[in-house]
Amino acid sequence: MATIMDYMDWRGDLTLKQDPFNDIDGLILSCLSYVDFEGIVPGIGKGEISLEDAGRLFFERHTAEELDKDRSFIRFAPYLLRKMAGTARFKNSKLRNYVNRIDLAIELQFAAIEIVTDDGVSFISYRGTDDTIVGWKEDFNLSFRNVPAEEHATDYLEEISSDSFAGIRLGGHSKGGHLAIYAASGVSSGIASRILKIYDYDGPGFNKETFESEQFKFLSGRIVKYVPESSIIGRLLYNSTEPVVVKSSEFGIMQHNPVTWQVKGREYITCPCNDKMSDLFDETMTGWIESMDNVERRLFVDDVFAVFEASGCGYLSQLGRAGLKGRKGMLDRLNLMSAESQEKVRTLGRIFFSNWGDMLQAKEAMAHSRIRFKIGKTRKSKDPL
Image 1 (spheres, one colour):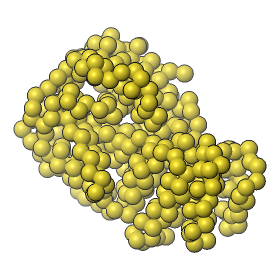
Image 2 (cartoon, rainbow, N blue to C red):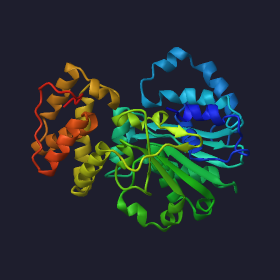
Image 3 (cartoon, one colour):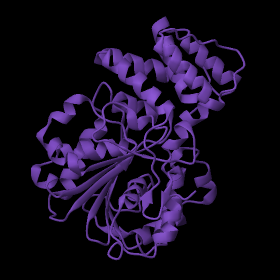
Image 4 (cartoon, rainbow, N blue to C red):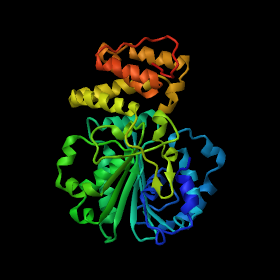
């Protein structure tokens, strides 16, 4: 099945003047911000570098052995950069205004880059989260509070766009898609009027209050959102627009990886709706969140991720393969919680990691309010709980 990498083989010889910008280009540029450009792409107001030159410098500084150590979803990003640097479509793009701000004390993880494509339009790419457990927790935190990265995203867009009159595209994958929408909704009306399109690729949504601002209503018609069939992060909270569902070559949470999304020519291969696992997650989380106040939501998110962290795994995608020691750690942490919290954590564990049959059984049991999970028995699934 073809992916964005194959797309660049097909259309990489065509510049954006020959074949106009499309939504697959938006995903590629949204993912470029996952690359660590520290010391390569100039910071705000300090100049620019071509994408081709940035790619050359990156691979002069990073060995294949070093890159192979990355086990996260975003390990594809350097290879995406190399592929882009070899195409007429992207290699002459100018990269500038790179920022990468991390402050663990205030739980800030923010990075962004401006990409001026050869059609003369700036694409602001906001970095999302990888599949680290701490990164996914940040996405769930959006259910009860604003995160520091949101304000940084707005300030960044305001600062780099204030002296320009050119058109702007914004986008991001995962949390990056959320940040692109949040920033666009918060900048001055003059900058907002120059925004051509906002791309959200499987990013978490918003609380209902966000949709009430006049600027959000003004921009809503320019937002496009894509999610995979088994979307989890992209179905958190309320969507800014009806998402387009894309087929993926992977299963479950691994579909969050954008390199698994299927394309044909200059379009995505789509399907009419999300799968049952994604629907179950959406129904479950929506019901829980709406029944809690912000304090209860915070405690719930802390409970869920305390169990996941007790596995000793660094990445959510590893939990299904947690060994005996990892499962024991999770169960020990689970047993410290109230019965209600235990039930919720186990339900999420089943949704994330069960096979199709287990998932359907869980959904039926939930409908009858008789969810019971037996721990320690042999299962066909990789459910760690």
